Length: 294
Image 1 (cartoon, one colour):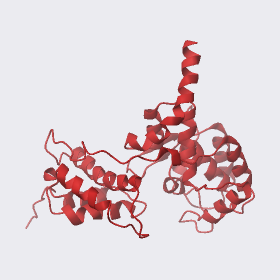
Image 2: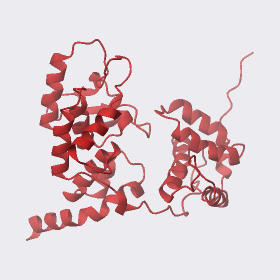
Image 3: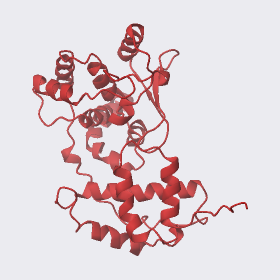
Image 4: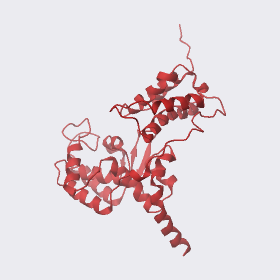
């Protein structure tokens, strides 16, 4: 007997389809979605109301996180973004009524703490690059430079394949098929990266498609110790690998690139993520205006 397909309607049903079709590199999104599923999993998504969302977010502000501390405003934003990703997916698959308004629409997000963004100056970048060349893993300098130029997340970079490194043509770039948002993302690369990729491709002596491998050819290399040591050697405080992503976006903002273009560069779904760099755009916009109108 043929089983009749049932269109997913509830929050849990639609979230399950979303998760099955959207590659995840870690369990963070799943755990944040679990918060919503525990409360509204059996409810039809189309019936999820602003009061439901408001109540859940208010509860989230009072619940301690994994380390026993209350969650920060930006962390709470990530919980709502996890659920909003499911809603976007449902819209794309036409699982919601036409004209349906998201229950998140009129509920403001928490500030993203723009003053806390740490990024590298040009001098700090040079010191970090020099220090990275002293580490045993020869691909660390390439990984760091690529992170700064592309602004890609660590997971996307580590699983980069040689087939996604396009070095020929007028616009060399790398293609990440599986970003945190589940979308393909194209990132242009600079001539120095093109030259380094070509050099590494020539000397590559192992049979694997992954770029950033070490002893184990089927999984990315664990670079964390080398990166920490390089930061220490370079005399850098408060720097993590994610700082390189902030550096990429901050450099663009300082150069006068508009927020929408920076959001595209970073693969941000929400401009609230990108606005943390808006205060850096002022000098760049001033230079642009002077160059155009002065």
